[in-house]
Amino acid sequence: MSWGTDLWDQFENLDKHTQWGIDFLERYAKFVKERLEIEQAYAKQLRSLVKKYCPKRSKDDEPRFTSCLSFYSILNELNDYAGQREVVAEEMGHKVYGELMRYSQDLKAERKHHLQEGRKTQQYLDQCWKHMDNSKKKFERECKEAEKSQMMFERLDNDINATKSEVEKAKSQLYLRQHMTEESKNEYAAQLQNFNSEQWKHFNVVIPQIFKNLQDMDERRTVKLGETYRSFAEVERRVIPIVSKCLEGMVTAAKNVDERKDSAIVVESFKSGFEPPGDFPFEDFSQNIQRTGSDSTIGTPKTEGGKPDPKNPISRTKNKLWLFGKKPKAPTLEDLSHLPPEQRRKKLQQRIDELSKELQKEMDQRDALNKMKDVYEKNPQMGDPGSLQPKISETICNMEKLRSEIHKNESWLAEVEGKHGLRSERRPSADVNHHAPPGRESPEGSYTDDHSQEHRSPPQPDPHEFDDEFDDDDPLPAIGHCKALYSFDGSNEGTLVMNESEVLYVIEEDKGDGWTRVRKQSGVEGYVPTSYVEITLEKNSKGAVTYI
Image (cartoon, rainbow, N blue to C red):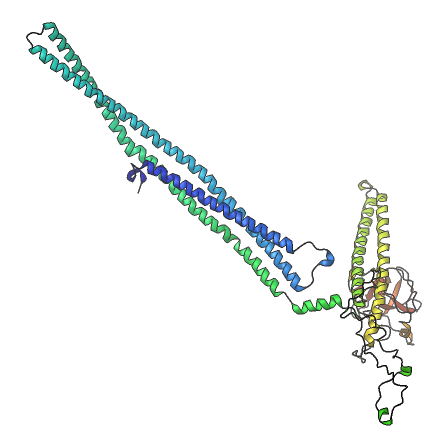
């Protein structure tokens, strides 16, 4: 089915149809543009929503509750989802809308060319028809004039009164008209033949070809629309896997909500470490009143002199009844003594960890500078070793300041943990059959295996902590040896003085309290901080393990 053969006389209708096709394509392009604008606005609103409910937070304000963490995970997934909507909008704008607009311009130019060709051939055929029509009319006029000349000649030839000259004149006029009629006849025949030839060529060759080109153009437009319909759907389909992962991430975040863990975090965050208040004692104000014999059997527990029992904890908890009242706000102190014991212990431990990390960074920087200095000394052309000395001195100074801060905070931490341990021992629920040796009980949080804290100052021992450790007459056998990394003054009783790089015998391992029992070459025994020595155990003593 061809437009050139079946629609040979529908030039105007084909003109209208091809214009409608281009208008429809541009209408679809406008639809795609509005759709991608909706996607862009949707993505922008989603990102604004995420930003609104996930503001920037300081390190101390980081959420710890599983419900909060899950909510922020959902916000992150929603932010990724918004990114996929932006991808959809971008792909639609580039692969669908942009392509349609470029193709529309090409179609308009091609359609204009084909229609101009059709109009040009139609104008040429009209000109051929006009030439043929003019020659036809001329031939008709010449024939009429020839007929008039013949009638005039016959009338004069039959008129006996007409002169010979008049007859001859009419005869010559007749011959002239006949000649002109013959010429116009031949011209008309030639124009007619030319017109018929051009008309056949017009309707059988030129117009069919132009209409075929228009048909091909319209069919390509239809195919292009189908391709862009498919691209429109493919853009959406390509983001479905990532969108599905975003939704799966939201479901996983919902499953990670743990109400028991959140409750434990509440306890950890607000636990004060204080003991609950004890019972109020009964104060008997009727002791000076005489009672009958029947009343004397009814008595109440009395305290000497009618005074409260000094062992009762009521006097200590009198000012700590904050259960339903507002806790008084204390000023912030450097040693955090304004905080409850449990919260103070946690904050001090956190501060020590941060200081230890900073100390480790300074030590790494010192080592790097020393290595660079060695390289400069071996290769002077690379740099001046003396230029690094100020930086090395500054780093060592920073290390000393950090060690001092760590030592100070560990002293406060030891103080808190010592009080906390005493309270734990006073609790009636404690297991009396499993007491640790005196002075060796490790308070909670007083020892850590974190090697980033290996160079911190030692915990401060109780002055009588190690008194009962050296009562045995038989010396303990050595289970290894150790090398002192730093000097230790051993100012507390039971501790041992050691110098840097001194080699000592290990006679008892660290039991978790941060102290190792050692013996000098002279036979003097005592405890030294585990973090101050590098320990190597003998192979027959729990394996050759090195502790630093």
